[in-house]
Image (cartoon, helix red, strand yellow):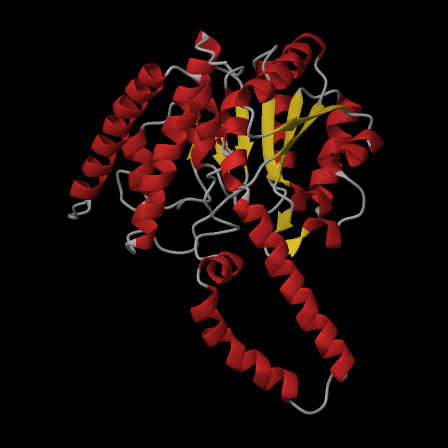
Length: 345
């Protein structure tokens, strides 16, 4: 049954604006206009939109190395954001931050490439809010791999002991770069949060309405009681850890990748000394299983797409009108950014 509620429409608008901006960002990177690695947040739109819907001026957000969505949701100017990624002087941070180190002082937004950074940063935001902006909250976005970082666990402890209004949001895609998280992490995220007696809940990141309901309850309580909470959101990122992800290249073009990496792997396997033949065979089988697991998850990407799922729940005319308006908005911002650097689309 289609649902055209105002809440779903607002969430869809936010998600589609994030998606359209991320696609332009990725296009710029693929053209070589953005240097360095590019960590796409496509697939996380439902998590970002569902939480951002309950934030207000005075609230703060600390992001991981995929901050574009949160900055778009907070209303940061798209041209300034894109110019920052392009390294231009007129960018959000004068072109010096790049896509992983964005900051908006007025909106209390920050991001950093250091894994786990968002935890202590959000605690700092929340501590200052108690004195300067009572009733405000802070949000920390991070991946499940960051749960092995000591400073993040210290942040859980500090927030609980000092009763800081921090919403810790774990965006869990099951992969820590190219390693399955369950191969390097003991226990599940909710159990870890329970160890710090954090109020906690789990949601499916592809369901923006579900994220919004859970986040709204947590944030409203945090405003009243000044306490931390933990939200575990499972999601799937179709672009992998970063654009050009090696696992994604193998899944997308197995024949050419087999030619590219097959020779070096065979040479390494035959090299004398080192591990035994049995151990080498075991390692090769492990690589095969890892690729197969990634491929299986990638095949399900459509059912995990929060933007597509929300579009299906809306009236086609309503959704298409939103798509057309926002595509034009983001397209104009992209054109202005390209003109500023002397390029064209």
